[in-house]
Length: 403
Ligand code: CTP
Image (tube, rainbow, N blue to C red; front, side, top):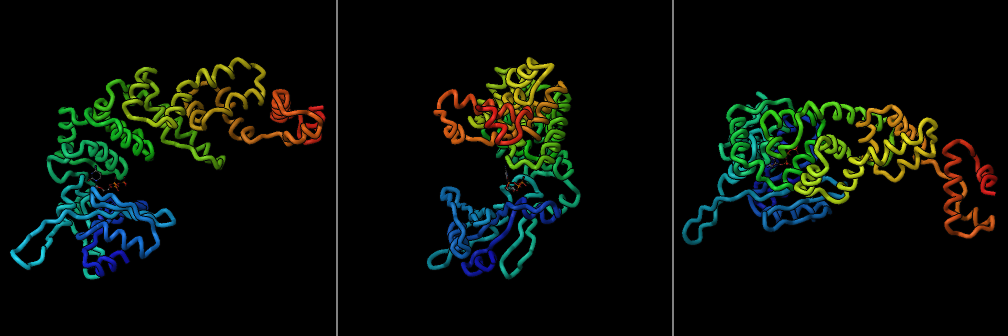
């Protein structure tokens, strides 16, 4: 259908990039579709959205647009840079081979493949740089020697793809990465761009493999020289994975920003001041910063208060320690702590206590002749505590307790 629209408008339409790579690799379904138009990409995107009742967001400056379908499916539409061959007088402007130029600007050969979508030559693969060969031989290779100068974040991408697909970076490309590190291209990147790469790395399965390779190529040291050797992160990363596997089995509805746990593991060995400066450099949002800070204060917020209640730690004590804390903070501390009683407390809290509520409400207290105020609140907490500790189990018992 996309191809048909291209035919109607007289544009060549291609699907490009990661989608094509993953299609040929038969990798997990890629939900990011990038299409390139030889013609007016914005006009194409508008027509596409109109035909399918989808929304469209236009970036005029870059001649790109995103078409967003009601079910969340997205298509990125880009305009191929066109070469104009203008002939004198009334001759039309002829655009030639602009898909090739569009592909030439891309990062690696395996990401520089295009498939034609127009009815005529539907499915034809455009492979100018040996992308199919490199896919077959499992090689990450740049298209030209200035690739990392154009965009140093490609160093992160090369390593990420290498680990994700079990490819290897070819030796010429490897040298270019080392050179980019030496020349300071990586350390000069804006924190925002580095954060974006870290976020993707921590959202993918083999985080520690990527970090190891980054350390080996000294990309990690260029990001932050204070980070410890990967060996010192390994235990924590393994524990985080274990905790997440356990948590998933609880089938809780509340979403967890899992990448935050790995990010916390990543910066765990930094001193507070170093961690603060690093987060500021990365431009971490306030919302994430709050979770990060709470987690780094886990000893004070979780471990010590629980310890102080030993040996007869009650469920109500556990509840009050945890119930203000973000879920990421709790799970991170479960992964980090070496204390069995802390792990057990987290487990009890998340699996048994978290949703406990009194059956009586403020209205029941009003019915008993009480007026809302501080005492009111205190009573409700007392009832909750009794429930948590198994002292009451029914509404009648709760009412009894209040009286
Ligand atoms: N690209 C590039 N240089 C970059 C980022 C992206 O050349 N620094 C190109 C690549 O051709 C890539 C395409 O833009 O395939 C789309 O980028 P993106 O969606 O970030 O990556 P994907 O290859 O789709 O990878 P992922 O599966 O991680 O989304």
